[in-house]
Amino acid sequence: MSPPDAHGADLRAELLATALATSAARLNTGSSGNASVRTRGGMLITPSGLAPESCSADDMVVVAADGTPTGRLAPSSEWRLHHDLYALRPEAGAIIHAHAPFATALACQRLEIPPFHYMIARFGGPTVRCAAYATFGTQALSDNISVAMEGRSACLMANHGMLVFGRNLANALALALEFESLCEQYWRTRQLGEPVLLSDEEMQEAVERFRWYGRPAEQQP
Image 1 (spheres, one colour):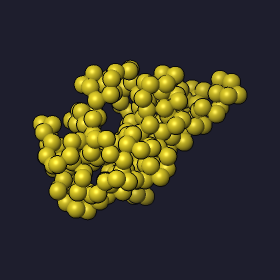
Image 2 (image 1 turned 135 degrees about the vertical axis):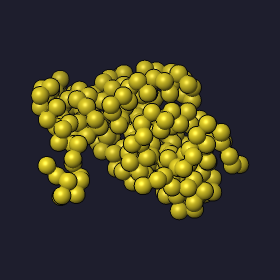
Image 3 (image 1 turned 120 degrees about the horizontal axis):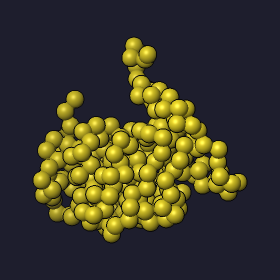
Image 4 (image 1 turned 120 degrees about the vertical axis):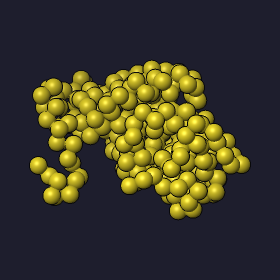
């Protein structure tokens, strides 16, 4: 299925609804965080410096594949990392960046999330990495995230927040909520001491199972 048209009213409304949902779920507050969706010829992204509650669907910003924005508002200051991740990961249909409380707490400790729970495999590997710090909105930050996201669909961002991609906006939002829940679980279990970690073999089995997780019955092994 080809990506949707960036100028479609339904897609603009869906992107705004996704941004509003991140606020309602306390993944973001105010104008923090951003969301985007891949389109034919580029992406549609939330605008810079505006809380979703202050936006209309028409405020969503078109950014072409070469990084050129069109519209009356500037794109999110993090448009580069969205743009670069779409170029690197053809399976990414939508991206959510959030300053979610538990993910951000771990990111401010610059922690990689180890295999404390098998659901870590949901994001592509035995760990979820923490991207090295760089100033927000810079190419350096985008480059650091590209490294942390290799083979993964989520990462922490040092002293900043979290990033997740999914096949579409609904899937990206579901994964962002799931990832924040895992971050909370890891934060809480560390209050009791270091968690017992799953082995490489156990995590590899979980990763393999997630390759077909959620597929139709006829595609199950």
